[in-house]
Image 1 (tube, chains in turn green, orange):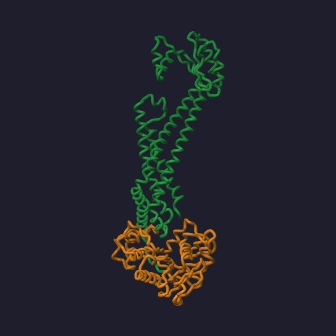
Image 2 (cartoon, chains in turn blue, cyan):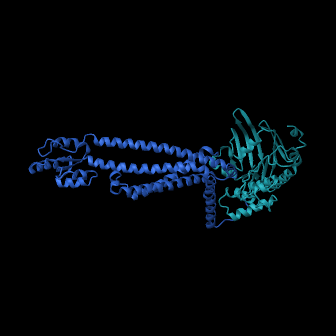
Image 3 (cartoon, rainbow over the protein chains, first blue to last red):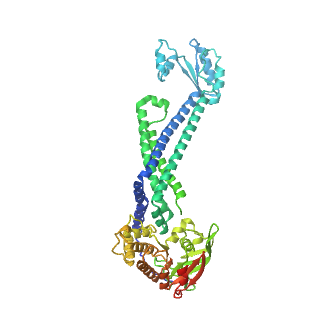
Length: 315
Length: 254
């Protein structure tokens, strides 16, 4: 057997360079050119995707803040303030403190004086006015009992209510069902947020799919020729995926900047109060959220394109 | 010595005989209840120029689509350049199509590309290893071979119908495929230009590429005296060897 060698072999380095150049041109340059040509058709997809991503970013940050709030609430709910009578004897207070400290369900007991209670109240938004309204200190001394398991708080509360050292009018901070009510509200908020994002996501995917469908239609002849001359499937579909990714990335960058700017503005405007109603949300967290929004945009754009290609492009 | 496909591959042989480039074995293709092709057997040898004739709806385009794996047969086997097209996965269709050049009645050139870019486009999207310089050189060679070496920078709208079809032929053969199929390539051309295109097909066949042309043009078929395959209602009713096609008066009346 013999054969005629028609083509010589390229040096490997030059071959890699040639393949990379051709890939860049066919996948990215072609996609960018096509995206610019179809910018009008892409605008609705860009707009709806940007809106979705801004909402996602803000809902994500809100979810993060709510999660932190839930953690704070859980830790506060397992901290039982046992208010002491102003006239309680030191021996009675010591006896109660010893009884609680030796209880296996209790993690720790801290004695808080009236002066410390006042100081603490002055750090809570709204309470300084109440503290200043009277010349005497209205806040009672307390034993702050950290309960190991939140389920045991009710039992601890019942065991201290009738103690001699405990104030009979406002014996403890225990509020039956308060923690469960907060959990129910947070769960409702999470479900509503996810449903809202799902709806927006569906609209954004449908609009992006439609814009890719328009791009496929506009380049029908080119696609046919590519398929007929033996272009591999990924090469025919690749530019459309890149085109969708461009739309998604642009929407992601715009949405990321808006999300970051809104959060940073909120942090600087509300200063200390921001950490009270959105605990854990800092400038760094806002930056990370913006980066995630850009990545989600990329994925959403290219994913929508892939779905559209599967539906509208023949093999 | 074995014959060689021009892209460097050695064509497989059996007992010293070259295998057909195209082979249909009992091929049937059904659309709903209609038989577009019915139990077709045929073989096309390397370097052979053959015409596929028959009335409209006889199954000519279906047969060409089966070769190019645009569709699959309902039953039977289609072998193209050693590849079993009848059960080729969609992900591997590109491999087959790089071995088959295609020419259409409506040329299918990209209007925003020049003639040379149209030819190079066909070359480079099929093989990423081809550099711009190589693509340009080979495209220019192909255009010169079809007599358009001096019109490489012209856009399709600046070319006549015959010239556009020549560019399409150049694009189809620039990768030197072992098979060229053409669906009514002269349908939009006047007779003189049609003859020029047929001369090109003869040259291409002389270089070893099998050429299968679906046409209604009786004058060309009778004058060239090449092999003629006649389809009627999806059945291959005649297979007349080269030089024995006669005046084909029956074809003119069909």
